[in-house]
Image 1 (cartoon, rainbow, N blue to C red):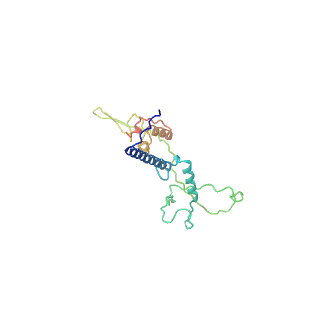
Image 2: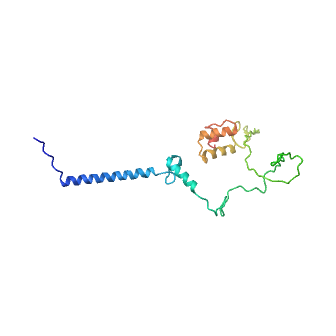
Image 3: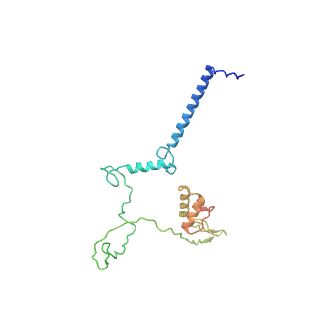
Length: 209
């Protein structure tokens, strides 16, 4: 005796099945679109850093960069109206030095010891002076008053009987740590290397006291 055939699904059951399938398809399409969007993200259309771009995105960026053509009317260098940021020679430099004349010709290589004087050219170099730590030993006179109290002269910075860093070193350390966002430990290490002197993380120089 054969098994009875299962009853055919009702219209309501078929409608519910179709609705469920439609909802599932819509969910998959949304997920697929999101995945495609993420795959298409790179440094040119999102906050993704260039180092995180895919190989395809990096290759496309190189092609786009190489395919750009400079306008024929555009001249090399800064364009008209652009505010330049280069250095201009100082009319009154801090000091002037004369360098040794050239010893050999740049063309043929002959010696120029007896060559004719052809005037002067010039160049300006702007640089900071070498950082040197000046160690000043202050002698502080003491005076004893008739009341019996002895008063010691105050040094320009710090206190009597102590070795301290001066205001310029303090200012440099505070500027480096606060405005430069350099950690205190790193600031102390950098200051120690620059000054060739010990700088403690807990030292008063680090806190401007």
